[in-house]
Every structure is written in C-alpha cells, then in structure tokens.
Length: 283
Length: 204
Image (tube, rainbow over all chains, first blue to last red; front, side):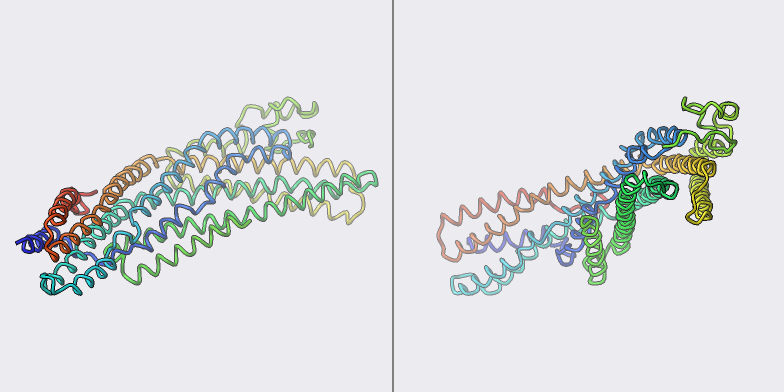
C-alpha cells in the first residue's frame, strides 16, 4: 500500500510539473561568465572620475584666460558626474543580477540522483519493481531539471529580452561619454605637455640648467603617464563595445542560449572582457 | 606661467578681460570684447547651449565643432614649434619668445573652448536616459526577486531527499521512517507549489 502511495506521489508530482519539461541543459555557465565579466569590466568609472577631475590636473599649466574657461568647464563637468556614474551603476547591478539569475549548476542534481538510483536498483529485490525505480529516478531528475533550469532559463531569457533595448542605449551612452572623456583628455595632455615644447628651447642660459633638467624629467614623466592613460581609454571602449555585442548576441539567440554556437561566442566575449580587465588592472 | 598675452585681437582674448590680471596695455582691446560671447568661439559655445532642443545631429555638430577647435589648436602648436625651430638653435629673440608665448596661450584657450563643447555634448548624451535607466533598474529588481525564489528551489534538494527516504523506507517496510518521509515530502511540495514556473511574459 505504502509502495503504491510512494509511486503515486512521484507520478503525481510528475504530472504537476511535467508540462514544463521542455527546457534543455541547466547550464547557463557562459551567460553567467559573460555577465560577471561585464559587471567587473572597470575602466569607465575610473575614467569618469578622471574626466571630473580634469581641472585639478591641468590648472597649474593654464594661462589666465584659459584658466577662466577651465573653471567654468570644471563646474559643468562636476554637475553631471553623478549622472554619468549612475548609468554605470545601473548596468553593473543589471549584469550582477543576470549573473546570479543564470546561477550555477548547483540545482542540477542529476548526478546525485543517478548514484542514488543505482543504489536503489541494487536493492531491487526489496519490493520496488525495476520499472518503479526507473520511473522514480527519471522522475526526480526531471523534477529537478524542470524546476531549476526551466525557471532559471526562462528568467534569464526574460531579463535579456526585456532588457536589451535599454541596456544597449545605456552602453551606447557610456561609449559616447568615454569618447568625449578621451577627447577632453587629449586637450589636457597637449596643454600639460605643450608649454615644455615652447619654453625648453627658450631656456638656454647656463643659469637655466637646473630648471631645464627638472622640466625635462617632469615632461618625460607626464608623457609616460598620458601614454598609459591613452591605453586605458582604448581598453575601456573595447570592453564596452564587447559588452554591447555580447548582450545583443544573447538577445538574438534567446531560444538557444544553451546552444553550442551561442555558448562558444559568449564564452569568447567573456574571455575578451577578462583580458581587457586584466589589461586595465595591469598598468 | 605667462600672464602677458592679451595684447592683441585674437579671439581668445575675449575671455581675458575678467581675469583681473590682464596687463594694462591689453585693456583697450579686451575691454571691447569683454561682453561674452562676442567672438567666434563665443558663438560656438552659444550653439552648444542650444543643443538640447536640436537633437542628436546638433550634438554631433557640437562635437565636430569641438574637434575642429582642437585641430586648430594642434596646428597652432605646430606653427609655434616651426617658428622656434627656424632659429635652428640660435637664441630666439625675446620679442619672438613673447609672441610665441601669446600664441601658446591662445592655443590653451582654444583647447578649453573645445572642452567646453565636449562637456556640453556629454551633458546631452545623458539626456533622456532616465527612462532606460529606471526600466533597467526595475528589470533588475524583478530579477532579484526571481533569484530569491530560485533560492527557495534549494528546497528541491530536500524534496528529492524526502522521496529517496520514502523509497528506502518503503523498500525496508519500516513504518516510522515512512511517516517522516511523507511529512517531509508534503512540506516540500507545498513550497514547490509556490514555485511553479510562470511563462516569461507573465514573469516580466
């Protein structure tokens, strides 16, 4: 009697949940890795801060009339800094959440159930018939997959599908802003270095020697600093572009996120993003 | 730094009048140009301020204008260096030095004007982003709620454990474990009822 109850209960749950059993593999590993790498990309926040603080750095090099305009520019830049950063925060939170939603394989209990199923089979003479054991193990595997992967996959798909248009708009804004940061930085760089191009040739008296030496050292330091910074703009732009492309790829392959091709492409984007982040951290 | 470069009619001098440290000999010219924006770059800045109404193409035009100013500054810098190099290591006469410094000051002012336009363009970029941002935030919040519920799916493990205990108990025919296992299963299936997957459209 109890045996029938047990089997009936299992089958009942099967009927309850079986309708949702159309999902594929539970693994959304590549989605998770891509979202993780996107959330941790870096670059933009630092370059936003740098943009905000432009005036502090260039102020000592500015002649009076340029300095006056620079002060106004400083006010303009500071007024919008929070908004610039808010865009990134929104996207980071989105990506972190997407990563969590894509979860890890911890809900996939297939392996454990197989083990236990095998144990049951070994115990076949105990009363459970072989077909019950088979039904039971199959059922429980299905159950866990259905609940976990079905719900998870669909949630990931929902998020990506509903989010893509806005995510692309925000990424596009971040890319545009980073380009403007870069252009502003170019003018800063040329302002800081420019005075030395002009003044060093004028300073050729013996009494200028110490000053000239210090100036040359300063110039070299600054030139190196800006060279490194230029690389960061480049990396940040590459990274943002890859985040945009990767998300678009997910959106386009909504129904086959677990397909080999999509997984491969997403894995590549995630790998590129990690490499870019390493590049940003390496300097 | 130089403070003595406001003695000519270069457009960049317009901004110098309010510095309060403008050399006396510059006063007539800069005074005439003092009301900003009364020159070409002032016009450029005014264009930028009007960009909000003009839309994206205006923003691009502002960026192009700023790029143009930056390029002119670059050319000016090259021109200054060429002039200095033309003395080929011989001493550059003091008056030429002063002239070059004034040009350098103009170059810096041009760069600042360009940066003003970049700042205007940047402010424009974020206009209208409130909606996309709040939608993404809402989506993220909804997803976070789903994650919370998926977290409860950890209960599935318990359910499976219960089923296995039941199966084992049934196999051995011992009553007490059977009752315990059934209770456990009932508990978990109640939880699972709340977790029945909903179609994406409803979930959104």
